Image 1: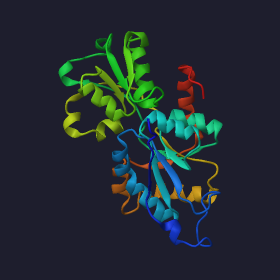
Image 2: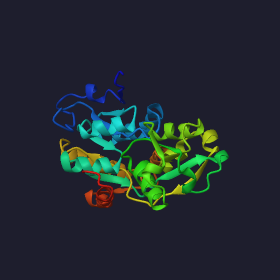
Image 3: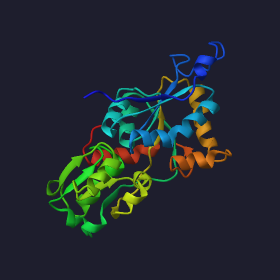
Image 4: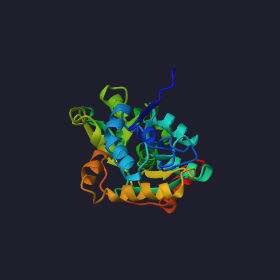
Length: 281
């Protein structure tokens, strides 16, 4: 299968500036800062949601940015583990892995904590986790913290063991919900962000069976190859969205409430979850 790569350069700023005037963001000089965004929805939808953020960062940081996602969450996380992105946003579990192996550092996050949602079709009539015994449950990826691991932890505490259900992985939260609507699965594990962004007419056919505990949300994390001066500019620009005139609309485009400074300690709870589930990091 041909590898899918979704890369979009938002401006030709780097080509227009002379080498002397360019802000050197990393050892590659005037090349764009590559920002990876996890594909919780379809790639085209992810691009549409995040384009205002990328354009804003280009203006505030004074350097070209390139947008990249992947056809599935698993493929995206593989690219993160390869160190492909200068800055990325996505799974906190992946973050605790690459913070240790590659030196990525969390610099900002949303104030809204993340949780998993267990959703089913309204017409199927499931009322409790026990109703899913012997049924299929769709997830985006095996190690997605909110839509998979927190949901699986909830099911275990509710008395539904992993071997009592059949698990399928669909690549994105959108496709997991579509699997439920198409009758390929009885339920799906997703996150509120994806559920709220799902097509309204289709979402109306679903019901939330359960919501899990809440943990720290996806971080914006930077690779150590980025110069510290540029990292500071990116972090300040993200925080400025809280009061900039266009900030409210930009935050709304990615379903953010407010951006705050983040650091590695915010993700110790995820390290505890990983240890409890025997997931290496």
